[in-house]
Length: 291
Image 1 (tube, helix red, strand yellow):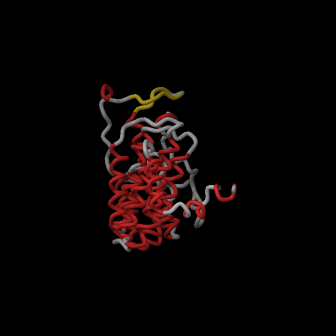
Image 2 (image 1 turned 90 degrees about the vertical axis):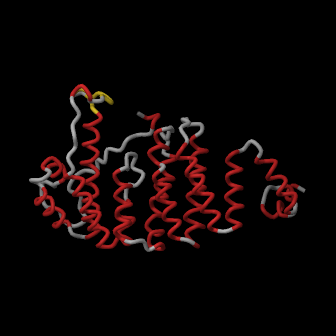
Image 3 (image 1 turned 180 degrees about the horizontal axis):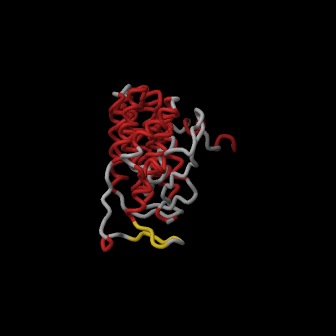
C-alpha cells in the first residue's frame, strides 16, 4: 500500500489526466510560482513561438518590478529566473535560435534592476545570471548573427556589468564573434577609453560613501568603472585573439590620447600569451542589501 501512495510519476499517472489537471489547478491557487510554471508548460505545448512570447512577457514584468526582495524571498526570485532561462536555452533555441539569443540578451539586461532590489548575499541569483551568460556562446553559434552586431550587443552588456553578471562574456562569445567581431569590440572599447568624461562642479558632486582618504564621489566611481571595463575587456580580447603583443602596442599608440586609461591598463612589462599583467580587480557592485 505504501508503494502505491508514494509520490512518483508512475503513481501519479494512475490518477488520470483529468484528475491531475484539477489537482494542479487546486494546488496553484495562491501560488504565483506554480501558476507561472504551468503557463510556461501550456505555452510550450502550443508552439515554441508561444513559449517565447510567454517568456518575453515575464521578463518585461520582472523588469518593471520595484518591490524589494529580502533573503527569505530571493529563492523564489531565483527559481522564477531559472525557469525563464531554462525555457530559453532548452526549448526556444531548438526551434528559433535567433529568438532565443534575443531573449537571452533581454534576460541579462535584467541584472542591474534585479540586484538593485534584492539581497543576494548568498549568491543565489547571480548564479542564475552566470549560467545564462555561459549559454550565450552556444546560442549565438546556433543563431549565426552578424559578427559586428553581436559585438555591439556584447559591448552594451559589458559596460552595464556592474554586478559581474557577464564576467567571462568575451571568452564565451569568442567563436561566435570571430576575428571581425573581436576587432570591432576592441575598437569600441578603445573609443570608450577616449571618450571625455565631464566632471561636475564641486557643488554638484554626489557623495556615495567614505574611505580612509575621504569622501567617495559618484563621478569618481563612474570613471573607475570605465577604466576597469576597458582594461579587462581588452585583456580578454587579446587572449581571445592570442595576440598579447598587439594589445600592448595598441596602448602604446593610445597613451597620448588617454593617458589615464593607458596608465591603468598597460602592464609594467610585456606578458607572455595567456598570462595576466594585472590583478583581476573588476570592482563590481554588491546587491542592494549588501551595500
